[in-house]
Amino acid sequence: MQKLEQLYEGKAKKVFATEDPNVVIVDYKDDATAFNGVKKGTITGKGVINNKMTNHLMQKLEAAGIPTHFVEQLSDRETAVKKVSIVPLEVIIRNISAGSFAKRYGVEEGILFDAPTIEFSYKNDDLGDPLINDYHALALKLATQEEIDLIKKYAFAVNDFLKTFMKGIGIDLVDFKLEFGKTADGTIVLADEISPDTCRLWDEKTHEKLDKDRFRRDLGNVEDAYEEVMRRLMGEQG
Ligand code: UDP
Image (cartoon, rainbow, N blue to C red; front, side):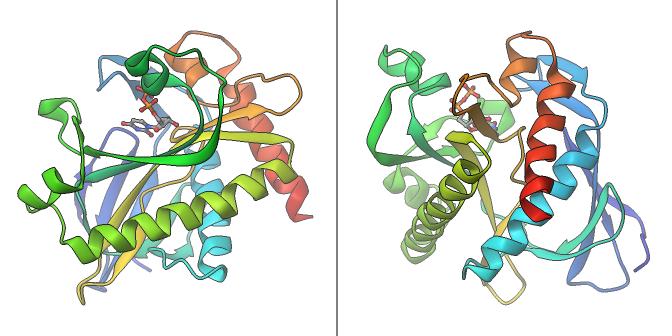
């Protein structure tokens, strides 16, 4: 598969065209940003880990009946994916209180919920990704009711799978963010990435943070945390 012109450069990934109009190549960078791009840095090796981890999980999710954009891993940092238009919603699922949830509602981090929660943010950097509900998403024509219903169903199914998978490698899945896309024929598929950049992952015994909060909160050992998740993931494979 040939990499043609660059279509887009985001905070953590670049996207390139291919000869196939329905396929693009994602190239994962080591660049890290937080707080809507205000904090910037590098996490050495992150691009390779996020690429491999995302692909590993997307293939498992696909097998579990959740359609994804994954086509084929091309190299350590590059993957061919279905070309989609991203639905401008950040879909956040939470199992345990943390981050903006804890702050917004004035509760401590680490409270286990009886049932997972779902929330949407309008994906718009200029507005700081404001929290919205289904009615707002419909009013803004970001998606149809049918698409929102499907996205919710898929997001909870991803959580069911991912929570069990992570528990199997000694990790509590605290929360995570998903993005969905629409292919040329209008099919909704899981897109973007599933990595320590987009999930909160706590060691089930020590409660050590094994995710991007180490970067956001200057906790140190950022690379070690990403590598530890990858090691456990690969151990599970072999
Ligand atoms: N998240 C993300 N990208 C964003 C915002 C959040 O990947 O732009 C992930 C984040 O890593 C966490 C979950 O979504 O796993 C919930 O994040 P939260 O709303 O608590 O926001 P934060 O505290 O990260 O600002």
